Length: 375
Image 1 (cartoon, one colour):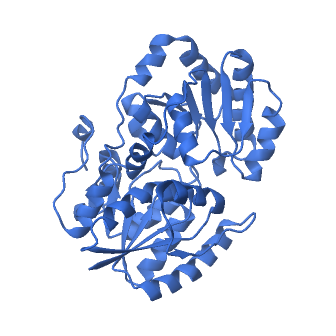
Image 2 (cartoon, rainbow, N blue to C red; image 1 turned 30 degrees about the horizontal axis):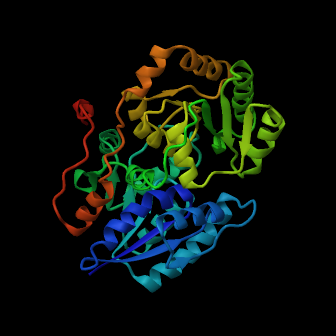
């Protein structure tokens, strides 16, 4: 029996870990699974637990109002260290690039416990974009014993950093597993005149996020036939700017954050998505939805290479120009909706379970992306 501790703290982590937990628990003769939630994000995490029928065996309840990164890290180290001592797992699995993932991974490393990193190898090459995620994921990848890389591009990045090939496993992204699992739970919403917006990146706080919001307001005025829908992140740095620039426009809707099922429905029915989210860059191509990425860099270049996403940054003029092009040029629009999803095939979690149990597996491949020169 192999003892696995799965740890997460935010909604995206829980979404992408839910299929892994399910795949591991489907093999009770091999794995004994303990789930630890740090609750870095409390309310949004609880929503995902309901959707996927998850329940944390251990809940550290670390969220505090207006918490700092360093304050969160210090509480996480103390709480997780006690969990590791009590559970004594053979493996600790973390996902992505959050403060929770980094702190839990380091705590396990300090105790000599093997670490598996789900979604390893994503890179922008800029430690400030996204901040602090780029640093978090690089730190984990230095010492993780198993690097579950979602694509060949992320595996290539790891090999470029001299990660040993026996540590790297190309699995596909578990977020696609989760998406396909819930996509059939509700019928499609018919809202083809809807533009979905999500904006929350920490590195955009201040003038960049105001530039984004002014662009969105200009677009809402230029295209009154569309409904511009923005579930506003709860961070006060986002909310204050959104209220100042966007509030009160007649065809621009500001909502509380959608739960995961509602977000999936909105993605499926949207005409176009403007986002700085990493997860939505992966999810939208599953439903053939064009994505304009409101960031200077992206750690998910596969969507750009496949033609289903475009990097437009935070400049007001560029955002307005690219969005206008897709809303007025049918050929440009359809060239983006016709591409395939380069991020996964719904079997990533099963591959991870196979790898941990020592079984052979078939790596995830997307078209001809493996033709790139290997280091």
